[in-house]
Image 1: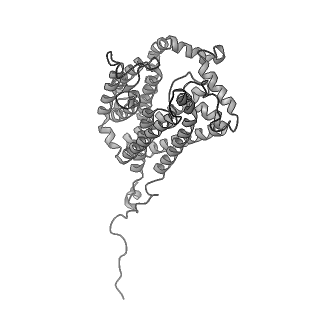
Image 2: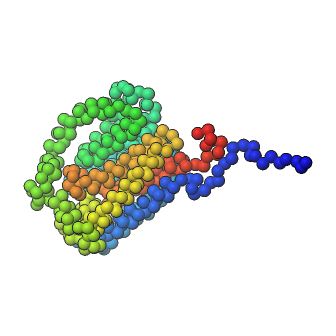
Image 3: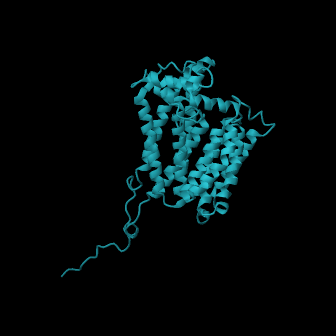
Length: 394
């Protein structure tokens, strides 16, 4: 008889590294990102060309600036997708420190030369390229909270030892943002921190207690003149359509004019001086006017897919930090998109929040693309090829 050859592998068999082995989520995130970016640039050109010409600028001025930000942002996305997500845990404190320092510079007395008041608020640093530090604060608070929540998991049963330490750092970022003033962003930063610690195991009753403590502060802030007018306009946009309710009234007119298929690209009328910030705060209304219900539904579906994939990445993250980071980053994009759309439809008071990847604003664009790159990094770590031995043990 011939010699029997043992063909069985002596160790665990490794699966080949293929595109499918790495998972489909990064490719899906990239595809949706490019679709939203492209739609954003096209809509931005239509929404801003009249404004640019009125300012004696080329009609492509704003879209060209946004395109340059998109190019830089895609490079940042690539870097963030390449960096292992665990690196951000080590950078949590430096990120919070840099964000806090920039926010203090923005609101500090004597810095008006580099942080001037624009439209009644000091939110931007003019240091070469215009920078909005509150955008950096959003991603910093998510990274820092995710990093610290891992160490605090066993203490979330106690308000003093569990949740209270987070409040000190959150307040260090929220207070200067509120002083700009930018209450909407300040509240958003606080909500994102709460979302991450809730995902880490914090108790709902603690959030209810903190919410009750915050009611007097919010009541006082909402009583400020311009915010009070916004609340009145929200409750009844028709009460002062030429004043406090002007923006929402014109936004609803834009949606109503669009109908099912829209009036056509470049044919919208609300951008002709009727709808303020049509290229930024109310760009969703421009989509509704020029692309109609079809365009609005398409945008909503693209965001919904992106958000669902983001939470899928969180559910399949290889470690707790990756899970919390993905939850925070996805929630940040989701809250931005939902609140912007809700404002345009008159469902919530005007907030001034950008529509991610579509609204004009390079600081928000860069932060959003960096966040998507970090999600891709977490997804790639989750989809590393496993050996058959490891897969069997799992």
